[in-house]
Image 1 (spheres, rainbow, N blue to C red):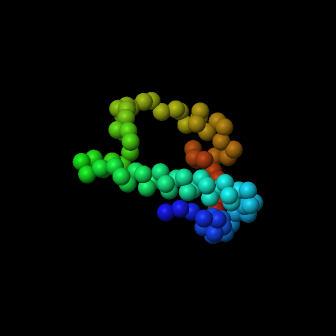
Image 2 (image 1 turned 180 degrees about the vertical axis):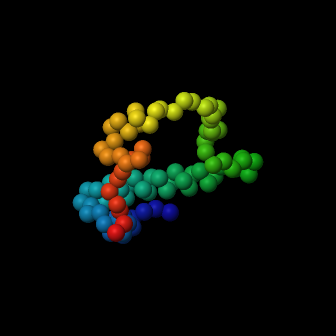
Image 3 (image 1 turned 90 degrees about the vertical axis):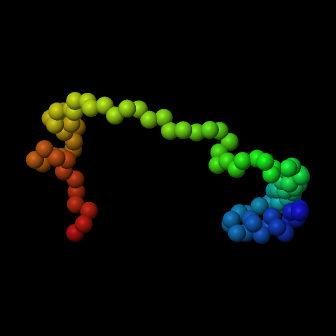
Length: 95
């Protein structure tokens, strides 16, 4: 399968891109090369290859939860623009 200029123009229209003639030719060549490479990959025997979701093994690295002393409320509210009854006061968002 290869890409022609009409395909590039169609995709550019869908993406609302205004491409010059030079860009259309460049993208046509680049996309065709990508598809040719994908076709070449189809020749590989992947029957014994396990499907993966990522090329690297990823695992979550979690730290242990530790209880720490909280800041005093006076220090927390020191930079608050407005506070009321020991809480941040913000403008109402609903009428």
